[in-house]
Length: 301
Image 1 (cartoon, helix red, strand yellow):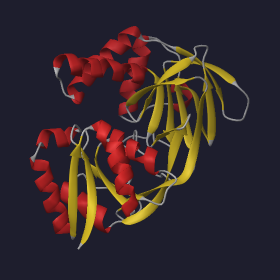
Image 2 (tube, helix red, strand yellow):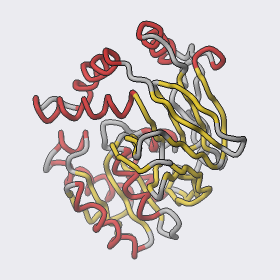
Image 3 (cartoon, one colour):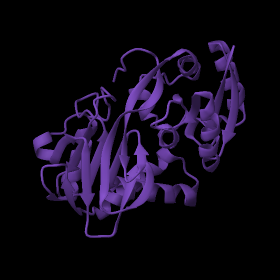
Image 4 (cartoon, helix red, strand yellow):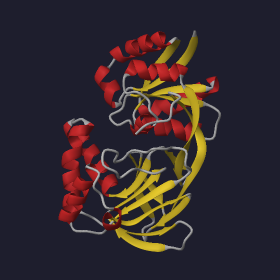
């Protein structure tokens, strides 16, 4: 029976709820899948060192959300070490787009018996992201949400609604300069979004990706608009009724992108984690840089 090192972000959504019972559940799930799980439940700051140590075995399993997956990708991208995911965070967009089941027992089966697949990752100024990076409304919302969580002890999902309303009340717009090889273009936008591969805007598939291997960054800049129009756009986008020509100032695909502003640094959300990075932001796609374990079938949205 093979032995797999399983690194758990104990502060992640599902993991935090299950507490100590999670370790036993993981051990049972992996035993059922035909492997022995050596489980380490760690704080976020301890996880990078644990991943580096476990990488020597050739395969690392991490349990958490998208932030945990991105942290693992930062270490493992460009190496031969395989990454398997157990989606135990509040949001699990990467696992979903890879077709990894949300059920713990089924996800453990994939971690043990799945197939290695090389996928793309995005990178900005040396920092890796597996899903997307954004400037503007979303980073502001994350900062407000985390403030509410610290002050009131609310879970992430509950803090999101008042945080979003507070940000929409301010409605800041950002003056940015973009260049993806066709000359610099100035834009004013409340939200610039850069995705690792192409995100769907179609009804029923909003925010999903059909592929993680096309070697492209997708760039979306929401058009400059008043508050009521922006709220109306958000509502339409959620039900798959965004209009590309109406709602987006810029929309394109590229392999590299430079974003600059008049300020010396730009606040950015990478896979939901806040960073402040010196301007200009130099984005690139790293095609096939990360090997992940998938069910062995083409991921379905």
